[in-house]
Image (cartoon, rainbow, N blue to C red; front, side):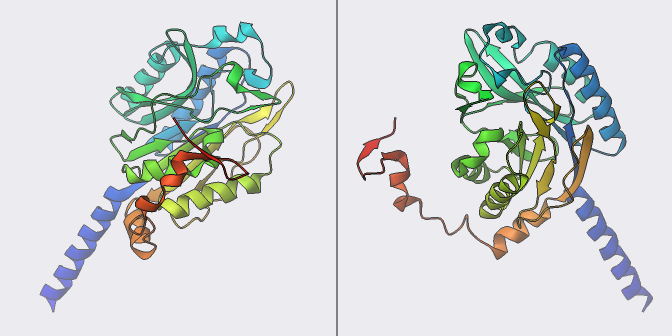
Length: 304
């Protein structure tokens, strides 16, 4: 009897320890931004330290978190806001990541030689830059005049092997193009981070499309939205995280500066994919038409 009790106790211990290894605490930081970059960085650091005190291991900021929303208009003076992937912002955040042993997703206005990108630089827990994702689907609509500033990303869909989990990134408009999420899932990403800059658009639309991507690919997706009233837009925050089953893991944040803290269990990904084997049952041999440009009249041309 005693032996049986001991074996059960040992089983429970290993079960709990194993679960702890798959549990991660994520943080999404949404803050109002001014036109002073240094002030925005200082604010982001303050919120990051709060998230770290709460146990966050991977922390993501909103789209273009160091600047005001300059793409509201086409103005050549705003190109001066761009910086290199190893510039002031990232150098500062690298030191922060190394000091506290956390991974950071830092969306910035990036310049490389003569090209500009809407990027997210990923910094691992040792302070090393793992690389960057550059927004591929760049909109050009009123108040989001992004093609004036940003080239379409040329890094494809990289998966970043952080200390805690393999992750992928889809920035704002990218979320409405499901191919990217599918590619990231197939390449091994378990968590997708989605920094956004949404104002006016119904929250339900974002929840629906991100839930769909999470379900179809069996991944966690964490949307981190801008917040605050700027010259022509009211960014509404309401950041949230969706489970591989497509469920909200907590209520969305409010419409003020705040931190969304979410605990995820990576084991849930394998469990969900076994129950709903969408990746297993794919038929890539019949998807060739997706690489063609199909017009409404049915005519086709090969996409380059």
